[in-house]
Amino acid sequence: MKICLCGCAPRMGRRSLIAGALAATAVPAVAAVPADPRLIDDLVVANRILYDQGVVDGFGHISARHDKDPNRYLLSRSMAPALVTADDIMEFDLDSNPTDSSGRTPYLERFIHGEIYKVRPDVMAIVHSHSPAVLPFADTHTPLKPMNHIAGFLGSGPPVFDIRSTAGDASDMLIRSKDLGRALAKSMGQSQILLMRGHGSVAAAQSVRHVVFRAIYTEVNARTELQAMALGKPVFLNEKEAAAAMKTNDGLVERPWALWKQRVATK
Image (cartoon, helix red, strand yellow):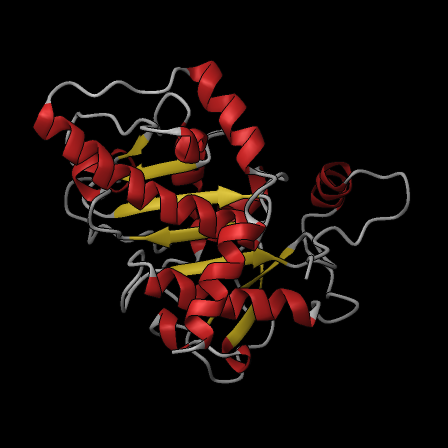
């Protein structure tokens, strides 16, 4: 089952459409039609997969850009990811205001998603997590680098966002405003992964399935690197190897997705 995330007219590339729509108006228009139910289904399944694979627990969240309106995104109400259903999915504008809350409470850190979508028209899905093996690399000066081809998306190593640069030294570490989200998005730049000091990480990708792949294998790579460091000095992929591996693996995400989806369907 393949998701269409573009809603574009013939001959118009997805990124061109999104970039044009983002620049066209400062105030998003109301989405003409609801999001594709298949996108919502993938978002629900993704929440459960990320929990099953140990990337999220009671905290963390995943969003998807609206497939019909690039100035909107979809994100669950504030709840444990493993419990998310289709009825919990909310729609937000890129300022992270809910279009219809219906009494539901949004995540405090939804600004991570809105501010990245604003500046990254290539990004169609985002994961924020606190996966345990990744945290040591966010809190030390040891870079997280690709240990094998599966984690080629790590490139030369993700940047680290330090909230003190924007919020001072007495924050609660949460990205709870547009200003903090904007600073985080700037720190992320064009990277696929961002580490957050004292907090966790962010993954970005061109689809829900791709971002789940990246979030999971960021955690797997972190565990592998920690093991390698205990044995000696790790040898990483170089930038050219990482780029080539990412290009190949981007075409293979359906394989693990099918496995992960079947696994959570039987639980």
